[in-house]
Amino acid sequence: MRADDPASRPLQQAARDAVQAVATGGRYLAQSLRLMVGLPDYDAYLSHQERTHPGEPVMSYAEFFRDRQDARYGGKGRIGRCC
Image (tube, rainbow, N blue to C red; front, side):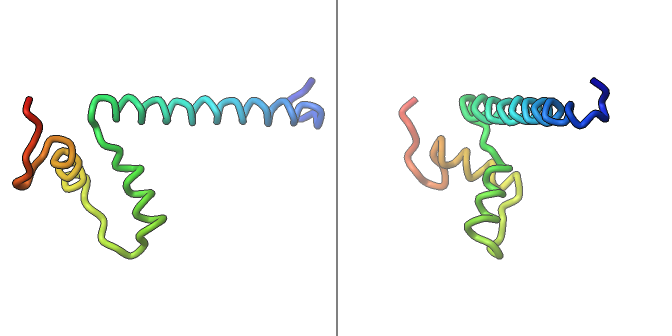
C-alpha cells in the first residue's frame, strides 16, 4: 500500500490514535509520580481555575507551590504532623 492510498487511511488514523493514547498515558503516569513524591500539579490547577473560576486571580507557580506545601505539611500557624 502506498501512503496516499485511501485504503491506508484507517491504518494511519489508528497509528495516530495509538500514539496519542501512549502520550496521554505518559502524562497520567508523570502526574501520578509527581503526586506520589509530593510535587503539586500546577497545570491541573490552571485548568481547574479556568474551567470553574473564570475571571478570578490565579496564583503564580511559587504561590501555588507554597500553598500546597502549607496544606501538606502545615503552615501559617497550623499544627503540623508529629514527625
